[in-house]
Image (tube, rainbow, N blue to C red):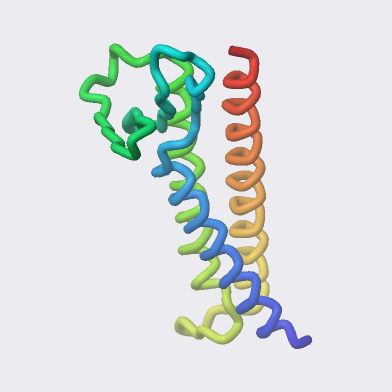
Length: 146
């Protein structure tokens, strides 16, 4: 494949990855607790970074957002902040990669400058992606230990 095609495919995959990170940050199933075995209550409780939800056996689901920041557990605050940092890093990498594409010309930019921009955006994507994967694994392992 030509260099331009590889760059465009990588750019589209980076958009897909950033969208997935944003979707994961907004999802509510970061922490789940199944209480179906309890004969008194049959509910399914799950929490996200932004709200907590309870689903009853009747199918009714009630979600309540977190109204405070300081009253939340430290782990939840850390995961929230680090997910946002990872998304911002990915968005900056996406913006840099737009200008690094060979099919886009801006003034008389040399190929060496575009190569440096491509390397910079690639490093930012790698740091953002590994950061977010590590963070999700860390939050999952903390949940599994409870």
